[in-house]
Image 1: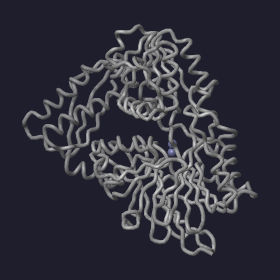
Image 2: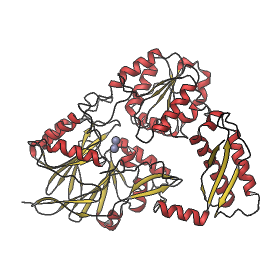
Image 3: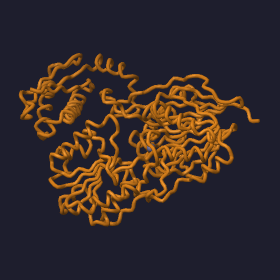
Image 4: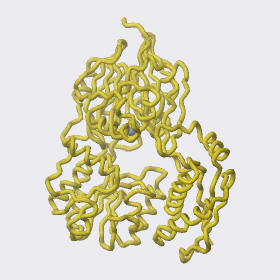
Length: 554
Ligand SMILES: [Zn+2]
Ligand SMILES: [Zn+2]
């Protein structure tokens, strides 16, 4: 009978959306699965990203053997720069995932010091007392793996994010055999993705989107804009293939889209025939029916390429009457307003807009397995203990109920949340305590610059650098600026070197250079003013006051 204590310690992602991070400990050895971020809610002004509190790992730093990544989505790799800057341990990931990580680390000047190790589905490796077997799974991204972790007490399986897609566009199949094989041998713990536990049936294959895309390509007369997540490699592959078939040139627009397409092409996930891709500048030299633009900004992010094109503020991407814009993504809860605002602007330009409105064939399919897929994996694996992961509490709870009803396949369901310590030994499994978890807010500019917590940040900002409120009066009906902008400051030492005069001029310039549509869209205009003023004030004073534009509707 093996002895020892196994601990499963979720640091994020269990009971919240995003920030997936899980520590597995046996004796004095810890491995970490994923280190993701969470996108902040709108009320966290000035915060760009949120990452998990890793105090537990820092307190045990000499025991941490490495971080293993399941795939390249931000909610799984987004905290890597911050984690490595605090704790430089080896990172294990598949080729494609590593390419995203390298990009990210490079951006933060951390690449040279990082110890990155490539893993492959089907190839086992050892880390401390653990032997880890990455298993190919299918998802909305490519090169994704589940992890079977052999421990002295038994095998743990962590599914990562998955759906069971029988026809993935890259033909890399979900390795159901590996799951079944483990099921035969006996599995101690199954940790499974809870995202789509509320959906009945099966999630459609990535290929389901092809029918809709075919239709769109066949019927579009003028320019075609397709917006999807830059990580939707299956979607980018499909769009470039169809563009080629339909005699359209492809233009990648938006930094993340360009980077991602480059990585996918380098690694052979998309094929780009000679002459297919054009620069944004070349667009105007081609007739509209010869152009297909893959553009970033599906979530209505105010500064994204699509948002800017929608208000006619993009140097190259002009959307005109009769153009078609496809939003091939889901609407992430919380982003509805921003997305519908962009769609509204597109309607105003008299573009055809195709978005996920529930009709079939779908313009977007989910990357996460629905109920029948979750049941399928549970039946194959037949774990002694089942732990729902990757979801808000509601989803974890429903997933626990779904598994709990499968009495012949599941020994016991353990419902745990971020911060719980689940201990397993020869006596069984139990919650044995809590560790510190939480959210760490990161400021813009550097993703390794922590804002200890928001209140601290606000107070520090206000006490050291003060606050600047540019006040702009806009006529609600005409969109005209009613008077010169006022600038009110508190706790910010203005001096009398003409700084405020300059700041007012910056605001005026920003307003003058913006279209009426942008001025009518307060989200966009506020963000533009904030960005321009911030640049100016930081340059003039080296200070970073909090800048909060206020629009008065008159
Ligand atoms: Zn994912
Ligand atoms: Zn995820």
